[in-house]
Length: 144
Picture 1 (cartoon, rainbow, N blue to C red):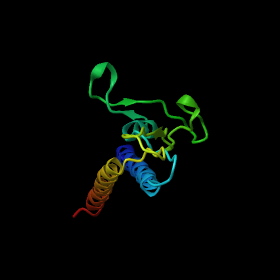
Picture 2 (cartoon, rainbow, N blue to C red; picture 1 turned 180 degrees about the horizontal axis):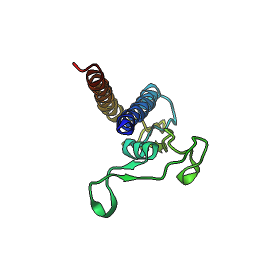
Picture 3 (cartoon, one colour; picture 1 turned 90 degrees about the horizontal axis):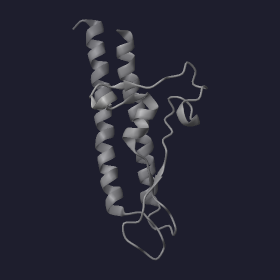
Picture 4 (cartoon, helix red, strand yellow; picture 1 turned 90 degrees about the vertical axis):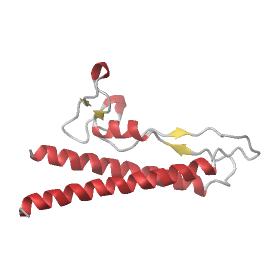
């Protein structure tokens, strides 16, 4: 029972950490919109969350049941691909330029603003999930 509670909170904490990292990357892209030869960076959130938590969104043979990946007993152990197990360091992708320009900058401000707003809403939703979980636990503990 306690494992289910902590697993839910750990999942949301990993999601929150990845959302804040993505927000930092998008803000960096926006800040460097006028920097010559700057290449915008981002990462696939779903893949990064799956790698960090070890839970896939689609299970074997196309079912919607979650599939668990092998976890290690110590954070110093290496997982798949030589990365530390359960790390929140996602693989970075580089954005291709949506239109050509003279300074070879690949930042598309419309795309970055949309990603920033979308990530902000999802970050706040994750915070609400965590608050709701803690409030539910508090209600269960106090018996009110």
